Image 1: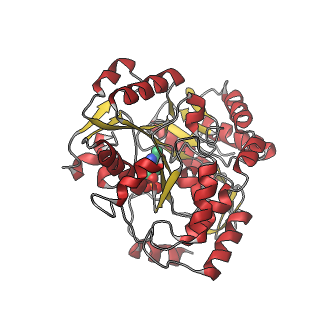
Image 2: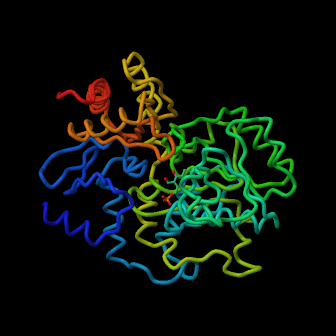
Length: 399
Ligand SMILES: Cc1ncc(COP(=O)(O)O)c(C=O)c1O
């Protein structure tokens, strides 16, 4: 194992000096196994990706069947491919009107890029508004509408005509005006440490966008598809966006992003210029087969998962924890606040030692995130809570 790790480090680019470095053998359900046979409870799902556990049978079977049928055959949009058609049908079945058309791409950030371009085309305007604390991805456009300056200053100049509204500030909504092409907002802010927006705020934002003719784009890449308890996080806010952006868990562990909008809007990509958003691998048939399988009977499975009940159990469990200073939660999207970064680091190390994967936030260093599988059993959840309680209570103590 040591030898192969060294080789991996030699030839694979790293994005941190301190990668976790655990060498993975396989993963099933809640657990990831390393090459030494140690099992880890995966309480972050690769940051909200494997929302129905690892090695999901229905998704794996669909992928295998599609691999035998065909892989890539043509750039996006030219041929009719049954996997794409079925994925689109199942996804749109989960949408309220007027969201009736979807465009599958390769990643979350690419979907954000497409959504921003779509807003410019639909409105003929240039100003892009986002929210302080936002994270929308790591390509130039997505980074431009993400807020964390430390992460972007080295890459300037970025997109012009971008503004940030103060988080949850009703007074600030007047800055959205007739110049604004869109307001892009995570329905629940992920990287900012699970920061919630009240229904009142979201409804006022929706109303202001409608009033001035700006598109409201909801980024539900992390918080969508059941993570917060409802299929779409916006359902709990009493609004419908003009554009919805999805990714992460949509394809059950395969790389994907998706833009959903009304057909009349999406048609803008077909002219002036034609091929307004294109990509070789967008809508890849294997990915779409995974999407279709992942979405089968979605509402039924989500209702059975009892996401809110499990989330409530966790917050109750940690209410009296002596070290955790605060928690934020929507469904099974959670942040635990700690007294210091040092405490976070030691807790995370201690968790790994004890076969438990939790993770940090880019923009909220004093906190630890959980995003457990939605179908985690109560027995597994109780065990997870007990381990984390101890790791967080005294990260330096041996258990
Ligand atoms: C809310 C949100 N938007 C966009 C992205 C970017 O998605 P991707 O990493 O697939 O490009 C992420 C990724 O963490 C995210 O959490």
